[in-house]
Length: 170
Image 1 (tube, rainbow, N blue to C red):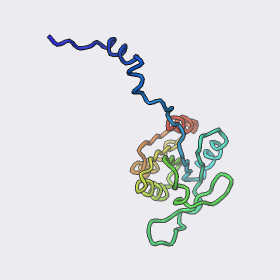
Image 2: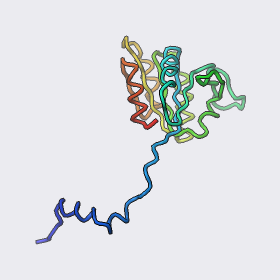
Image 3: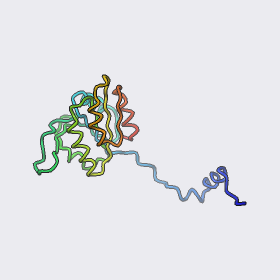
């Protein structure tokens, strides 16, 4: 018969000072360099309201002109607007980002979602998307975001954005 330690014994051994010396002593860094991007006008109103909350390092942006390109012949580099109205190119705002959250209320931002999603994929940046659909009409928005978001939430409540951002430690 083989003597296996019980769970209680294993827990007791793990709490000894000898075992504690192997634990990571540094606190978990909860700071994220998040970018929250509104893909349409109604989503821009939501992100404008969200920007008033205290966040750790999050930048809130809205779609300005998705047709403007960087002129390098590759993928478009859309111009986004910060909540203070400052224009910034997508490529510039993603330099130090580690998570991008796209918010849509309709189907208008599908092309921009594709550009953002593909750019984030190239840079290995996590993406999440929230479709706020109080009238259950944005199936195309969800379908457009699905290939570009590791996390996709479809909700009829705009307050779910706060929960999503909190879950992502934004």
